[in-house]
Image (cartoon, rainbow, N blue to C red; front, side, top):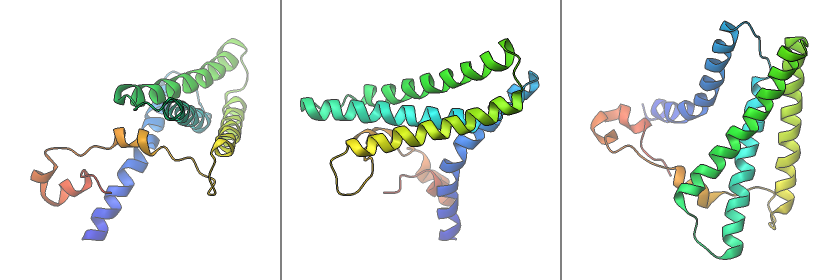
Length: 165
């Protein structure tokens, strides 16, 4: 039973971004567009959020100031939205205004988005002075961790929502 609870606890957070992407694609298809570029758009949004968080965390570390919890959440969120909106505008400009093939444009945006994400992710890793090539956003991620106060009352189902360190 513990293995099942651990599986649910790890699968739900991993499935939420896919749920958002598929819901957006359903709405887009209702409008008559087949956007195959959604993975690329999500990838650019994600790396934009990581870049915003990385730059804010490093700016606070360089100035020896504590992170503001509101800015630590708001800056990555706004950067993520800005990156995704930019990619969405590229798709809509090409398919609606220029009348380019939707399938080709979507697949090109997916390839472009993953390439941009890998390039900038690799560039951030080079900025970190560490023996292990990784980006550690531990201070920022601490503001995103919460546990629901009512999870104790849900029994085994509440184990999914509790914070696991």
